[in-house]
Length: 137
Image (cartoon, rainbow, N blue to C red):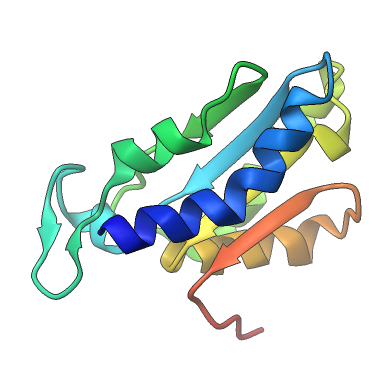
């Protein structure tokens, strides 16, 4: 788990640095893995250990960022979830947030969904981090 947190920290460090260099808030959507769809947030995977959901959200947090995340229900359709997610992104943009201030981070199943968001949004200003999933269209 500690190694996973270090890797996540290093991957998200550029987002945190970028957020500190701007007066406007950065918005980071975090999409968790499939294991958490069917288990409590504090559950431990039998092979990979604690999911560390709360710890990840805390690492993503900075003084100039807003972290947006929700626990998905089991059995969601990744394509439909991605399309609903784009509505959330567009709503943020319509309220004055530039697309280049929005990042979508997904781990495992969350990364799979994030890739669908990227595919459907077709917006080069959005920022994405995909962790450990292979996208199939």
